[in-house]
Image 1 (tube, helix red, strand yellow):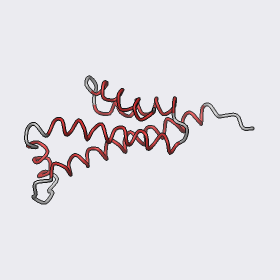
Image 2 (tube, rainbow, N blue to C red):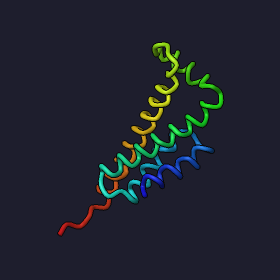
Image 3 (cartoon, rainbow, N blue to C red):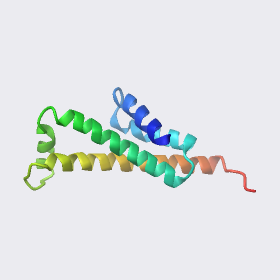
Image 4 (cartoon, rainbow, N blue to C red):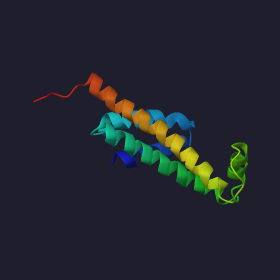
Length: 119
């Protein structure tokens, strides 16, 4: 559930706002819905990783990967026909890590400010 919420809300908000909107979205939703820190991190990481890979594919495949190959050249990747895939994976990992740590911070903030009652 957390995975879908983060992916859908981030997709909608990224149409109008900068890329880093994933951080407050993941923070808030993990503080609200996450059961544990592990759940928060991996749900947010996988949601944004998957979202950015899919959106990247939608943008790069119709133009024959021109921009992704140029970015690969700027990153001095070895010349081959799969450089654009490496660029997509790098961007997905960076977005996933940003969202994952933000969600983890949201979960820990909830625990810090609203401690659960122990039995």
